[in-house]
Image 1 (cartoon, rainbow, N blue to C red):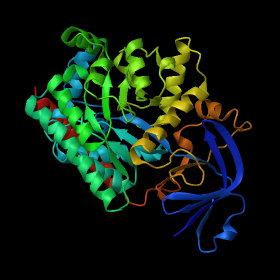
Image 2: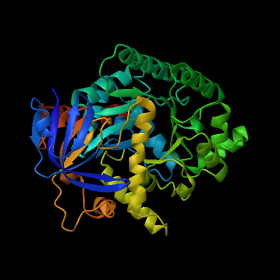
Image 3: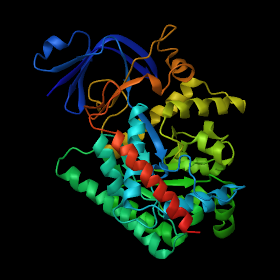
Length: 441
């Protein structure tokens, strides 16, 4: 049935614009028409009067780790960790080895729910579970589809768990991409796309990169990988391979316009030139960088395509944008709120390159991924200051309803299914995860 969101205040953050009293006509999963007084033209449509509520294009998180969803308040035995490598060894690489199917399902599902509650309509996830590789991406997809979140999934291929683990990781990426292609070929509705995942160059030898390159060719996707998050990644590439990180990636054919390269804190000018030449994306994760004390990505202004992610520090992009902006200003940077809303908007370009459809505008022909707010602006809200409202006033508390693919997945702050039981089970799985981590010692 055709739907109309009537009497909406449509706001675009990048570039900024505000239009009052608009009707948004939605045909299936796509916006058919936007204008004033349109309801009379569609007498059979289902009409929801928004009474002037603010509507924006959906919000995209361009890098996350849903496998970390049950780490909040973790009470496993974690040794003191003085640097990034010890954080990986003592926490994250123990946690991912302790994940099984049930733990992953609930970890992913609660992250999906919290993303939607924060107004996020799409999450690009980067997954790892070395003891449960085959079929892991489909388990994550089940959570996305249950709640109605859009996304792109990949498995974090690495050689840190042996050659068999590397091979299994590549195979999981390929098989998941093929399963997505099968759904698309059948003309069925789908919410989840596939990328090809790698952990980081520091844990991928040349044989692993060759396998990933073949996976890209076979599937037509891009590589989603951490690069130069810590200085060690850079020195390892120089020491072992006598190459800059991005040149090493490019030499294997791993850099293209679907490439999602994450962090890049310590990329050099030549690395960034490689990124820009291939029209690839760099995803900035300000809060994670601060949490891990890996440094600040000072070269962001030289990167052509910057998007924003959280790297597992929640799924709230309001918090991420604010912290990224304030950290930048604290370093003496020249960016303004509008620049960070532009980075947030760039997540929609990634979606367009993977899904082959139009995202990121409340306009005819674009996907009906929308966030609806009950934000009461205490000062005039205009196209010129919309980004300032986002950074200095708005938060996830203002999110009232969320539409993904033309479906209202969260309405008047309620999901269409019981979530209390999900959180109860998630707590049980979290305790089991922590126990399994301690058993690995």
